[in-house]
Image 1 (spheres, one colour):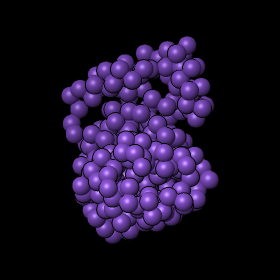
Image 2 (cartoon, rainbow, N blue to C red):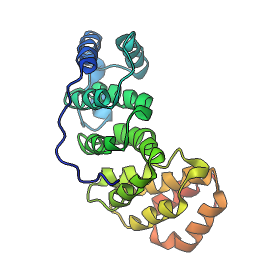
Image 3 (cartoon, rainbow, N blue to C red):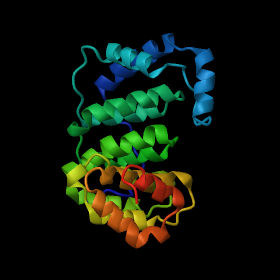
Length: 240
């Protein structure tokens, strides 16, 4: 089942999302630290405004928000994620990412267009990488037919969609489809953007923890096609 190119997404009705978002905005908003928000926004290259919540504080607040709430179904996950993404401050998107990481197993293949929307809307590595490895990767692992979508994503014009395809197998270890991993890396070996070149190296370095010889052999054959950054990252832990 291929779901690439889905139509514009609508936020489904969800009583759970109504309750959760009300709790979330109230709880996060009351704890905002405007002074801390300034350097946080600068560190993330002004991708979005921040409330100024550190990760430990934010996650403690999130536990308070979620206390007593039922587990979501797919419509709830969709509503929570899309509504968080429509809020300006980045911490709401971090909440959505954590929520989806926790409940990705309750979502079907039809959830993939939602992840594409999230990856390509207000994109930066802080949300994209976690969605790639923990949400998109989980969806593809559960439904191998979605590899067709990853094939398409790996050739996309959007660099963040490409990065997601490159990184979606980060946690697969021995289950990694090496043919696809190497094909995606070669397909984007000449990409001009730092984040794609870095992702190539990261994906290869992670797989090298499982099969270092396969990565060494691959780079021995194809090293000349890759940017030095990609090669350095790939060989960081295993040497040439």
